Each structure stands twice: as C-alpha cells, then as structure tokens.
Image 1 (cartoon, chains in turn cyan, yellow):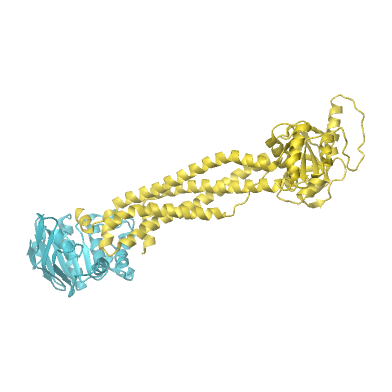
Image 2 (tube, helix red, strand yellow; image 1 turned 180 degrees about the horizontal axis):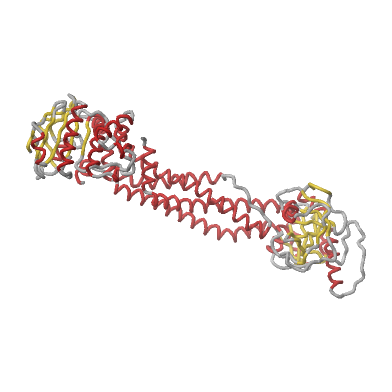
Length: 208
Length: 408
C-alpha cells in the first residue's frame, strides 16, 4: 500500500514539479504514464524515498515517511520497497545469485538462498545463477533485477521504465512477471513509463 | 554475502590492477625488509668477531684491509712484518695479549691460519672431535671447513699458495687433521688453524724446492716463536683503555708496522656502505609511495566506473560508511598481500645473497625470523592501503543517489 499527498519538488526556480496524488493498495497495480521531461523519474524517486519532497508526504504501509533520519529512511526503503530500474544494473563483480542475496544483506535480513533459487526458477534464469550478470542478455538481466526487487518481500514494487529497452516479446513477459510476482507477495505495483504498449495492461492509470 | 566477500570479488574483478598494486607494494616492502635483514646480520657478524680485539698490527697499507684480512679473513693481507717487532709489543705494560697471525695459504678456498693457542682461547671455540693440533703440520679445522671440504680426523692434505685456492700446491709437505672445532658462529668456523711454525715450514721448503739449497732444520716442537721469522699481523688486547691512547701512535711512528683499530675501521666501513643503503632505502620508499598511488588510482578509477553500483547499493539500503568500509577492506587486503609477498621476497633475496656470500667469503647469513622493525613495516603498509582507500571514499560521501540513478 502506497499513497502520496501534494508532492512538490523543484530542481531550480524554473524547473518545478507538482504531482497528482496517487494511491495504490496491496495487490493493486498503477500505471503512471508521461512523456519525457514530465518528472516521471522524479516522482518515482520521491515514492522510492530517494529524494525528499519539498512539501507533501509519502505513506507506505500506513506509515508516513517524514522527519526521519537518512539511515532510517534507507532501512525502510531497503525493507519495504523493491525498485526495478530502466536498465538493469548490478554489482558487476558479483554473480547473479550474490547480487540477489545482496539485497537481503543490505536490508539487514537473513540471506535466503532458497528464495533466490525459487525466484530464479519462477522467472526462468535458474541456469545462470552462478554467472556474472554481464554474461546475461538484457531480457534476462531485467528478470534478474525483478527477482532482486522481490527478495525482501517488499510492500511496494516500483518500476522505472522496466520495458522501454526490451522487444515486444520480452516486454510482455516482464510485465506479466511483475504483475504475477507482486500479486503473489501481496505488494502494490507502481510502473512509471512512457511506453504506450503498457496502456492496455493496467486499469488504474495516472497521466502526468 | 558480506562486505569482505564483496571487496574480494571487486579485487578479483580487477585482477591486473590489483596485481600491480600488490606487486609494487611487495617490491618496496621486500627491499626495505631485505635491507633491514642484511644490516642486522652483517652488523651481528661484524660485531661478534670484533669482540675483545682492541687493535690489529700489520704491514703498512690500508687499515681497513688489515682489519678485514686479520679479523674477518675476507680481504688480502697487507704484507709481512717481523715477528720480533710484534713480540716487542708484549713488553708494553698496557698490552694484555698479543696473538700473532700468519696466513697466505689455503685449502679448497678455506684459509690456513698459523697462530698461537691464544687465538683459540680468545674465540672460546670448543673441539668437537679429536684434539687441538700440538705439533707443526697438524691442523684443527673449523666446522664449516670440515663439512664443505670433507675433511676428517687423520686426513692429510696439501695446501695451495694464495687465498683463492688456485695457487700452486705445496705438495711436498702435507698437513694432518687432528681435530675439528664445534660450530661457534665466529670466523673460526671457516678456518684451518695450525701453528705459526707450520706456515714457516711449508714456505721454507717451497723456497728450497725453488732451487735455493738451505739447511734443513728440524722443528724443535713446542711453541717455537723464532725470532727472525715473519708473520702477517697480530691481534692485540689492551689491559686498560689507556693503551688505546698511546700504543697506536707509538706503533705507527716507531715501528715498520701500522696499527688499526677495529671499531673505528668497521664504523668507517658501515658509513661507506651506509650511503648505498640509504640510497636503496630511498628507492624502496619511492616504490612504496608509487604502490600507494597505484592502489589509490585503481580504487579511484573503479569508483568512477562503479559510481552507479555505489548509488544502487545505497538505494538498496547500504550506508555510506559500509561502502567506505568496503573500499577500506580492498585497500587493506592489497596491503596485507603486498606485505607478506614482500617479506617472502626479502627472504628469497637473503637466501640468494647468503649463497653468494657463502661462496665468496664463507659467511652465512641464514636468519629468516621476522624482525621487530618489520612489524612497523606492516603498519606502514596498512597505512598506505588505508590512505589510498580513504581518499577516493570521499566521493562516496558526496554521491547524489537520485541523480546518479537517473543519469544512466
């Protein structure tokens, strides 16, 4: 469950953003569509607590994220939010499974190797677990990053342009995975994109 | 999964960079450590043999050469002096002992030293097998000589002229081994000790053989210190420090001999070597600094490449401090590897050096224990690694997570 109220953010006096309130309950999905420059990534970073809003607030799992220290915010983010980026990025020195376990480690949770293997089977990259991430194709990498976002059983999954660099086949596959996996752990799924292919996939939509 | 594992993975990811950093550090540490080892062991060898000898007298020439040849048996002797003149020093009330030495022959590269029983007393060497020689042409050999030249009690051998083992053989008269000294770690280990009279005997016969008929004379037995004979040099002990004030000058002005003071000459030798050692030490420090810079550049570059990774890890809940620790572990790990590789390198170097010294001078420098100074060296290496890691880490504290993630 994630909601926001009156979020405002400005990079400079000319570049100001005011965002519509959003709300996405558990097991629900929300598509935020917008052209470049409309502040899609800024909104996602505000929702992901990577940026502090100028005014307004973000509420995750019924808890308002305000007046907290950087360390507290970092821990809340690690434990309750899973983020999937436009292009999958990893710690390149580590293997696929270690990159997944890394999110457990950084969220100060027990490292759940069984869950990593389970997710790898679900998302179809079990044979690549001990490879370096750079040896995988882009579609595979994106699936690994989805699995990584699921490792800590987050309340919310935020996806930033998860499909824009993928072909139609992989696009469909990734969006299906996001939907089924977030539903299976009871999380809210918020997708931010300009990818018009996704319009038909989501009933709840916000247009920036 | 822990910080240490991530750091190790990062080091493995950049194998060549890591190797270069560790190699440079190893070279620097190895050089300094080798210098420390050599310095300590040479010093020990030199001081041990000098103990109790206040002055050396011999033919005029280089005082350092006189000390090196008479005490350490590594340089050529300066020449001969009359035994009578040496013995006249005994009359001086400040002189406690006079130990005349006669050398010039060798067997398989080991020097044959003609001297009095006082010499053996002075170095406090014990006999391991057999008994000390008690007649002319009998010898007692040092432990290293017995081992390397394969001499046993009862063996006979002909000496060769000169000290390099390549001179003519005096094969008309053979030495007989009557005893073997126990290893003492002193110069005696590498000597063949005999009476002064043996050396005279051998050379008189040599001259006779060369065509100068001379009356054959029988050794009288006992300690024959014949006047009219020559010796190479003599080791002198004083009764009290007053001797030091007067005797060297007397010897230098009133006799055909020169007096050399071991402590002064050895200090001079060390100060001569010191210039070289200082230079090597400076080079080693430069190498260590370069190693530090190399670790720094390597971490800094990888940090630039890994900026996104860092932002990613921060967004996944890592604290900036834990990322700093991660870099620190990388730096320290390279330092530790470099340090131990360096220590290993210095031991290999010492082994090679020791082999060379053994061959040329019969001195062995075989002590491989960790020196206390090397513990400081470890701390220095760790400091280099820590500083090299800490500098690029400033970037982590300035990193803007949102911007970095949005930019790529």
